[in-house]
Amino acid sequence: MSSTFFMPPVNVIGENALADAVATLKGYNFKKALIVTDGFLSKSGMTDDVIKLLNKDGMEAVVFDGTNPNPTTKNVADGLAILKAEKCDFVISLGGGSPHDCAKGIALCATNGDDISAFEGLDKTKHPQLPMVAINTTAGTASEMTRFCIITDEERHVKMAIVDKNSTPILSVNDPHLMKGMPKGLTAATGMDALTHSIEAYISTAANPITDACALKAITLIIENLKTAVDNGSDIAARDNMAYAQFLAGMAFNNASLGYVHAMAHQLGGMYDLPHGVCNAVLLPHVLDFNKTAAAARLKDVAKAMHLNVENMNDMDAANAAIAKIRELAASIEIPANLTLLNAKAEDIPLLAKNALLDVCSVTNPVQGSQADVEGIFKSAM
Image (cartoon, rainbow, N blue to C red; front, side):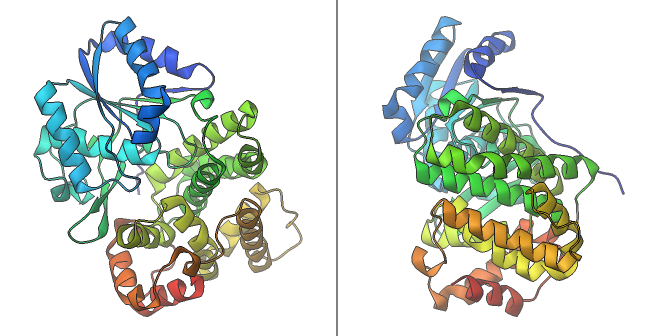
């Protein structure tokens, strides 16, 4: 069976990446950007810095800063209206997963029709999106370099997973200096998101040697650097390593896909408007407990990547050691211990489980569970 590998054609990573990337843009002959961001980054001065760099190279820009933490169908429609009115010929996303996903939705709709919900699922669009440049300010979602776009359908209270080769940016930027100001809670949540990407991709039924190499290196970098980045946000070496880690994790899941952690987390985000990385972090050990019957040998590799001494353990004991290490890391960076603390409600579990099983991410989970199985995982995480 063949594997297909997706990622942007150009990716600039490391210190001073932003200036280098904007200089690279000159060769595309773009005229006017729609910058998609959020209110915080718009006020922080970072958006103005990007506009100045663009202006210096002869490009104009207008700003849409109405992106919600969980971007919605309305956010996409509002941004699209500005793009059309201002006749923008490319899109720049500035931020973490929320602006990236909102920008992908806008760029897809600009060339494929105004209804973003028509593209839910796998490869539903017919045309490449308007060219998009993704400038990343968090180390977690990897949305700046993936074909995944997650948009909340406000009418159905569901997070739509749009997985489409046409939603891949043409250029991604990861500059650790843009990540220095990330608050501790966001650093922790996005870092655990990256860890979840790595592990779910590694135990995915669609994993291959390329995604395996990316996932295992990402796990090691996260174990070595996440706590430091949370405790001291100005540590540029830790920020740089986390930028590389989340990018490697993105390379892994963009091509091997994910599993039940993400399928379930999408439902929690859609129903309760919760932070995606926190949902992943809470669910991850519970889903791995469910998956370890089929994935113990692979989870032993995960344990080794975490620097755990599991050489003389059997696969199941090593898998349990990996899961224990994940719980320990999450607690050390103050991730909430359960879904009840996030105000999830037990009476919603049947609907959450039903929608999780319909999510495209569930397809590559190593154990295909029933409605009752997924309800059981939700209950264990409560």
